[in-house]
Length: 215
Image (cartoon, rainbow, N blue to C red; front, side, top):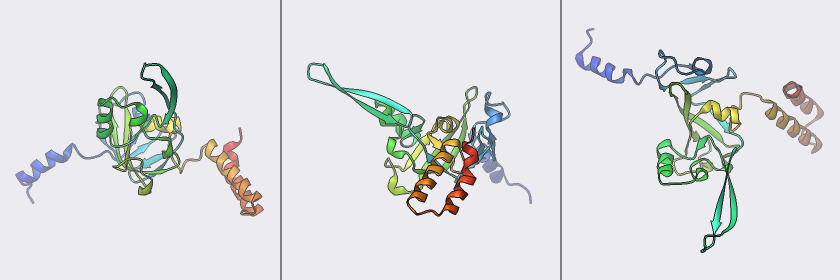
């Protein structure tokens, strides 16, 4: 069947919107190669070798940002300083909304996600390859539990996925780190002491997570 002019124009119009099937960290670590165009990707292989897909769930870790804001008297004398913790790599809202806040002069702790995000599950809704010399994977994610959302849109934006994972502000629940293993072992011991776990169940947890803690 011959290709119609309309079909050809439609193809050309949307050809640039076809997402990458997979982008690998090791292919972009030193900058984006000319053969790899910026744009959406359906999957990303991290520096640890694990592959994340659109639709996968990540867990918010521990916030690393901190800012002290001062309150002042009517004479301009500082009375007290209030500390604000926040997720330094996770924007509390869409990129467009948080950029608007920044232009309005909002503080970092008002733009980035608050500490209560810790432990919440976030589902990847979009991944995008950005940059050239300094390349990063941008991510938008939604709250698995909508009742937990920290902003009106129910969306958070991660400007650099690899950086967020490295900081520990995000973690992949399918990847067992030393910190995760220690938490699991502590939890198993507490449950054993409370009589919730049997010795056999505790030993199973120890066998699974113990090797990740060993030096």
